[in-house]
Length: 297
Image 1: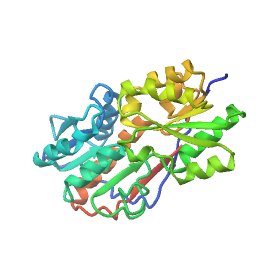
Image 2: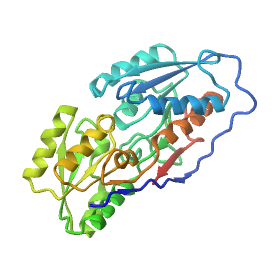
Image 3: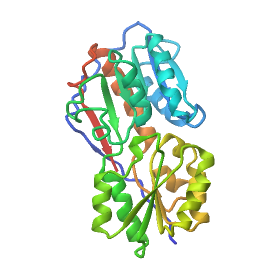
């Protein structure tokens, strides 16, 4: 089967009214908290992209900013404790990504600005009230609008027209990996059946794909999730082993998945630096004047 590698990025600016930092950053040393759902090694490229974005705005670690890192290593139940640790350090802003981590930060503080470097459907998951007026203390980027996974489904059907039963790989600990109305509507229009298969930890992936084979699945959708992102190559290998056409993120195709379509996560982290800068210069918790940038493929 020919491998399709699609990585088209389109930025939809939804009331993105950032107040650009005027002049050079102040001499004050700002403290940034970084809450990672996965491991430091797996997020190295994305964290470096954030540093690059900050440097472009005049912020350099060890000179005028300090970044405090906390890593959950894929164990989402640790996120609330780690978020509380960062807040106790009196950080000026929290940077994080993914629905579980953002939710943990949101439940921990209503006073520290939270910058999303990427999330699932931030509105549907209840993280923000709307893209134009998120409310509360959250701003940043939502990188998987509902239509994205629906587009994965369309590409799968085009690549494998005989597909009838599609598996959705989900992490039950991450509500952002569920099917969603847009995906269900698209599946109905294409006469496809959707079936969910769960994996919380890497060692559960083999069993999930074994269950897909027993249930005569024809193709697989691989949602973006911290655990899945870290093990994206293993997931691509499992799909090939079972001869399942599979669709997922841009990175999924880069490591051998059939179809990859989506945003460049590193670009999101680099752009998140703008919101970190905004959060400090606006100097208030309510982020309604900033909005949330929806990035779709």
